[in-house]
Length: 372
Image (cartoon, rainbow, N blue to C red; front, side):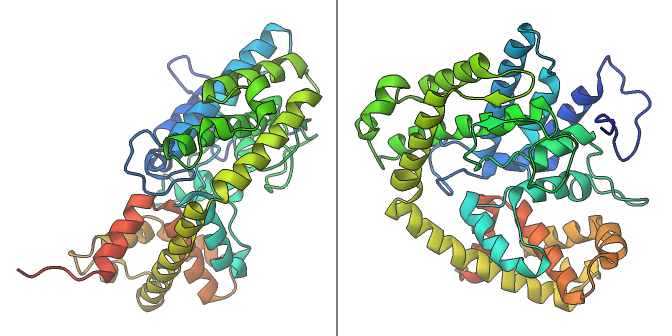
């Protein structure tokens, strides 16, 4: 297997007693992509409540739980690195679009001519190409280790599998299992972290009551997020080994039932569906508007920024200007049509936007402003 600590550009001295995975964790923690997650929501778009789970909260939960699982497995003699698990966990959702999975579905449709959009694969693109642009030289993004990049691109939290063995070698395709025990832990913990929290948020939003949770789930696992996390985390620790990260048969069945319950009662709720329909219209409209601008101005950054009253255009122009090497030197080698390059730029840009910024931009562009 390739050295999992390799990175695009070697770092000879990490300093301050840090190892490679400490460095990756802090690189993600301080990145712009991670900061934006605080305004990207999971299920409930653009909430007024400060207590609704955001992508940033979820990523911190996954990192903390994965670290805990690793420490417990290591105490049983299983070779795993809590710092690596924490780095993968904090970075696993960097590729998410605004408006959660609804936004991902929309961007996937809009990007169908350029290999679609999936947040796992786009997370890899974020850390390798989009975040931390440089003015000269090859684009390397956050310059993370192979192990962390493999864990990010292959985390796929929607996979129903509850028993995962590391792949023999890293495949950065978003369709494989991670090649490390730590990556497999994050992949399974991802589900644990969002199932209970989405249920808790739905109760707070009065979409359902705790008493609506099926009796078998409530009796064995509980109905509160802390109870749900404790049950599944304890089960992973008891049933995993060096070759396989796994839940017990009983816990696997309960997770399947809980996932089905959440999908039917929360994610399929008529209010959530109505939000999705509005989101489709908003993102479709914004996509068309941005495509017109990039078709007209292309790499002439000053033209995007000529109207200082349009914040969206200034942000869009800076985004393109900061990544001129990527879009006008590197990407043309892989995209044969100019229209595909334009679409690549717009999809990349839209993926970085927060729920809040999308709403503010649409208001700026399409709602009349008072003159008195």
